[in-house]
Image (cartoon, rainbow, N blue to C red; front, side, top):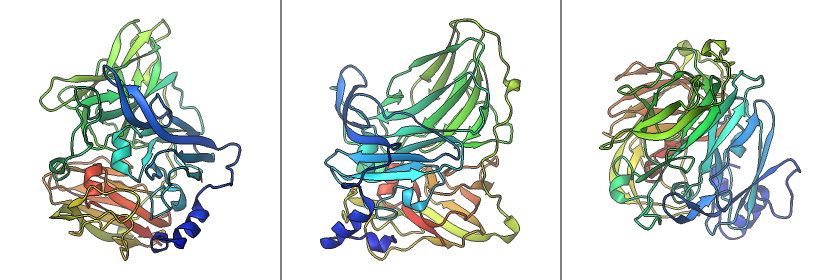
Length: 461
């Protein structure tokens, strides 16, 4: 269904909904039920009510799959609001991408939607709603996806760290998820930083063992400056894809920037001495360094070496042919403040501050909104991303993987990704092969920026 076909009202709503939603039909037995629901959880001193998760009293779980094997999920909505689930970073069929009005109808209260896809790539990914996005994500609905390699890479264990901010008052109740001031600038920061919904958790792993540490920033706003304190480590994957260059391990004084939507995998050699820890630390503005999560050595065992690990196998991403590439330019910046009427079921912040190519997004269900660019299928394209604002923007492209090839401000390693952090006044050229047909969302992953104009879509014919 094309975007124009998803605009609905009256009888058209019932007809279109019947094509995409689960009514009396049942999912295949192997489908996993994901029930979006209200939750309560003790983030600090007492339970915080009004959270959103896939269980009533726990964070969204890590979802596991295997490269090349089909996955099936039935997402069921028990909220009063509409929703839809996006699988961030997965190069899957457009109809399964979970973007309301672009690839599917929103999932209404009491309804469900069956997702089925086969991930072509191994790596670390994540999932979150793409309808009522700010309200549901800020209240907790962000989870990690692990797609295992076809062959075991040889680690003894792994740890998944889901980094999240929350905005709470003194009684541990939610503050408003956003402010107009924040939306017009760098975003509204939370005041409680968590890893897996906990403050500074420490996880036990065998002394001398090799651990795969998967770190995911699923926050709505915060760009983390992360580093490791202690231990020996190596970066092995970035945004799901194996790295083929030597990257510096982030240390105090030289942290790694991890923006909303981005992921990093590290191979970590645990200390051989029981009780010693490796700390994942964050530099936060105006605060001393903070422990986000720790890995603690327990027991005794042989000391393994990172050199024992083979490089992760490449994902099957098509290599760009830069000599035959077509150039497309995109300008990300401010726009005169204006009203953003709610034209659908997926919410609005009520105003626009941001734009792509100096035109703010007209709304999820707005009529006569075409693609920002049309990419010929199978051809190499270079996208020039120009940031004309003083704020940083993690630009995310659905359904495709790309590689940076040039920046006017820094030297960028050739890391395959789906989310590119644009610095102040930065211009970055990225290259991709348009090999996945469909209409693909293209937006800033600071959700307040996305919901106030900095979004659109690209069409692969």
